[in-house]
Image 1 (tube, chains in turn red, purple, yellow):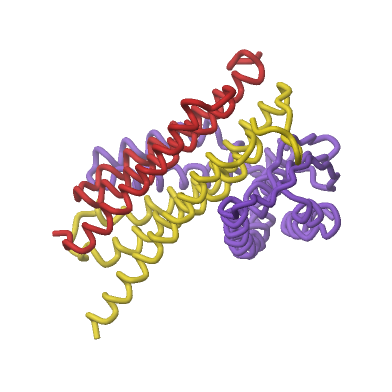
Image 2 (cartoon, chains in turn green, orange, blue):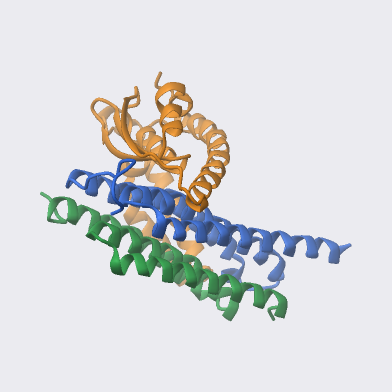
Length: 94
Length: 172
Length: 119
């Protein structure tokens, strides 16, 4: 079983990460151009990886680590595809 | 990259290394050691190794071993630079007056290979106050956005990072 | 003796978590405060990378304390997965930052100069 002290510390860490996600969400909502929004969404995605790992320890489910690995790969590829689309107007260039 | 002579001499070694990497990654993700799972892993890794062996290994193995030895020493130095960079950015962000003076600079390097250029670009992005914007691989020209004058001088005048990366990949 | 080592380990874990959260908060504040797109990416590209890596490394140390040697193989492999995650973040985060920045520069987003209005 997880100790109560460490559980409190993990919960506090997760809450602070959620606060940073909300700050980034503000930038994604108002953010003057499309590039500010893409950057903010990328930041939210990378913060979500860490949040998933911490949730894996809070609920004691090792499966969450696989999900966070998958999320890291998907977030990276998604950002690259979005940047390429914004630059050239198409994703598959022949 | 991808000359025919180097690809031919290192084909068996390339297939072997790719197979080992893929199979270890399979074991890492599954973690179940019965005949069905391990057998499926071996078959999948073999298919991937035969299709894409030339993506991972592009040189002779003794050269790669020496390079990776020097690369680890470089990574230790790089970690220390990353720590400095973070304190620098945190200071600039949390300072009430925000001491920033952005500018875009250009410089040439002697690096040509893919891996060396990627290493230098990522190092520039992670170290104090600079981010890579554009790279011209033919000329080895880097365009860099710097947040203040001092980090720009570190790249333009001192050139410590370029020298270290060039030493790791031996392209002086 | 064992209790002392465990206490030191847990203190180190908490220090890693606190440092990571500090850098992530600094990155988020920078994302809000800095004047334009390029300088904002300075804050997110560096602070977020190190903050996330510090937090995951702290959890990796905690895992050594937490799971006994009798656990299943898939549970014992978790530190290796976390190490892979750390390497991947170090490789992928600067590349994503560079990709967005290159797209913005090539489509003609003007960089902010000292004395300009905030964007």
